[in-house]
Image (tube, rainbow, N blue to C red; front, side, top):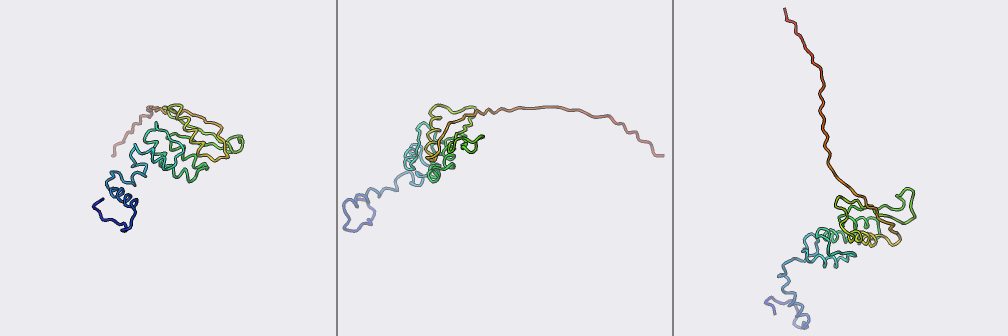
Amino acid sequence: MSDKPTLLPPNATAQEQAIEQATARIEDVPVGIRDLWNPDTCPASLLPWLAWALSLDTWDKNWTDEVKRKVCASAVSVHRKKGTIAALKRALTSLNHDVAVVEWHQETPPAAPYTFYLEAAVDQIGIPDLSSYNTIITVAKEAKNSRSWMTGIEVHGITRASQYYGAAVFSGETITIMAEPNT
């Protein structure tokens, strides 16, 4: 039994006494419960458990810690708006890819009703592997509404470079001013 005074009544059952004894050392836990529920302060080894607790639909153990934390941080807002275009965009943004959603009425000419496609803008690194590409598809299918159909993904490569321009211009005339002496 613990040295701390008990709050249980004298007629407490053995199970209640065991629970009190097990939770008496809760202050000795090195990580605060509040930190465990925060994706920014949760230890990296416990992020899969946080994802499970937040009921994430997609999880990849090969993601970087940064992506895992972003996905966990966006989980609540995605679940609140699940089935809307806002939830779809938020879920795709948390994957660290620049993905835009183009709906059927935004196309010229308009596509079949209730369809959409994704435009992924990739930098010079691109989408690293096939599993990342499949993850984008899986996240999109889970966050979209059930009536809409994804018709595909367009991947656009973006290359950034610096250009330097230089020019020199010299122009002018020589003007001589002759002053007349004052007399």
